[in-house]
Image (cartoon, rainbow, N blue to C red):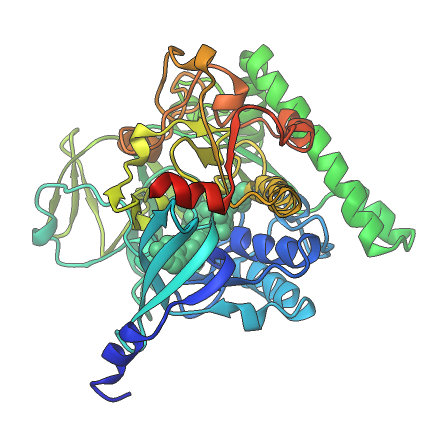
Amino acid sequence: MSDTAPRALADAPPEHFDCLIVGAGISGVAAAYHLGRQCPGVSYVVLETEDSFGGTWWTHRSPGIRSDSDLHTFGYRFKPWIGPPIATAEEILSYMGEVIAENDLTPHIRYRHKILSADWSYADSLWRIAAERLDTGATVRFTANFLWMCQGYYRHREGYMPDWPGMADFKGAIAHPENWPEGLDYAGKRVVVIGSGATAATVVPAMAETAGHVTMLQRSPTYFRTGRNAIEIAETLRELQIEESWIHEITRKKMLYDQAVFTEMCFDKPDIVRRELLGQVRKVLGPDYDVEKHFGPSYRPWRQRIAFVPDADLFKGIAEGKASVVTEEIDRFVADGILLKSGEVLKADVIVTATGFNMNVMGDIAFAIDGKPLAFNETVTYRGMMFTGAPNLAWVFGYFRASWTLRSELVADFVCRLLNHMRATGASSVEPALRPSERDMPLHSWVDEADFNPNYLLRAKDLLPRRGETPEWSHTQDYWREKDAFPAVDLNDDVFVYRRRARAAQAAE
Ligand SMILES: Cc1cc2nc3c(=O)[nH]c(=O)nc-3n(C[C@H](O)[C@H](O)[C@H](O)COP(=O)(O)OP(=O)(O)OC[C@H]3O[C@@H](n4cnc5c(N)ncnc54)[C@H](O)[C@@H]3O)c2cc1C
């Protein structure tokens, strides 16, 4: 492209769509699918920063990357999942690729488009959006009546990396799972993986296959569940040659039922659940292993996400001596490894920092309403998907205790119903507003820390929207409540403030 092309593009009139979807991850593809099905005639575009679809599953390239929840519920309700329940990133991408191809979504998706700003105009009832084309550097402009935020919750390609003293002194390689160095050679080498979450639990067994030894270094332990990477009911139904769509539906229902029972148990009988989870680990590691120290957190189960370890591969690696766990604090990095507070040095050639995410709030997009910057931490969330003072905007923030995608589709159904309602009633904008009786409701941070407290959420809590004291004004993290509550929302409820374009224009004059 010539030097003048970016300017020419910037000067071109903006392209208009009824709906603009941000992100082509599992949520953005769900949004596009449902919009096409449930709102025929609505024009839409999906803008995606990356070169391809997949979001999390596209950007994460570390060894062994896989889901930690089952694909019958992490997959879409409309597309049967036929592989083992815990899937690799490659398998998830291939599944999503089929969804895109089968539903002809490709023409709607534009890759290498990083959205920079979104400015709502009350007078025109639309969002003005500027995006950078990463292939040309040009700024391209769009207008859209509705903005559907499917940008996930963390900054891709920029993981959270604590600033440990002495990092520059370390002579080996340091890799973050969100920015995995291509071709990193760790065969036969000593690897230390810092972290205790789902990513560490995936990276450790995968690297242990070829590394000399892998040590998982954690400050504090995490709960894991383990079992066979298979679901009995799906296997039985398959043996009976039941149709895959039925198997998907039945297995999904079974998984959801089991998850509901498990979650309830975590709240009602946390001690029994803890014993059960630690017992699963002890079965593989034997009675002499200090399971309490390395896999027995001080918090009650489900205060942080519980990852599933398929076929106990992490624990088998430890039992076989290919991997080990050290639960200790880091003092500093040194030339040949990590000095622990105990004075011991963990020797390493490669250090993997599986230390989590940097949350991004709304895709790091500069939002404004009629030119005035919109601070999301000054808004109150309506059911964890819309915000006071933010017209024609929905956000998909999935579940932690159930598969993320369940919520992507619940929100999709809601947004489509809302768009159809607006079309039928001639409304050009909608925003949720606290009712007069709710204006004095105490407001809190996005998540209830007593309920769910992963570090990345705590680090970002001051940036996130506020939460009220009722399910209507919070993200309840409760699929079993929301699956009935969302479809039952009365769109004529006085919580929704609708405007018609003519009135909006008059108000602005
Ligand atoms: C390693 C890992 C494993 C996980 N495993 C599970 C699991 O097993 N089960 C589960 O329920 N959850 C899991 N999660 C949580 C996971 O992030 C979600 O389940 C899900 O994949 C998120 O999908 P999404 O489409 O909402 O967001 P993302 O996957 O984050 O995709 C968002 C997309 O939006 C794009 N985007 C962001 N900002 C902009 C912008 N300004 N302009 C244009 N495009 C933009 C990004 O490039 C990205 O492609 C996992 C997370 C990680 C990191």
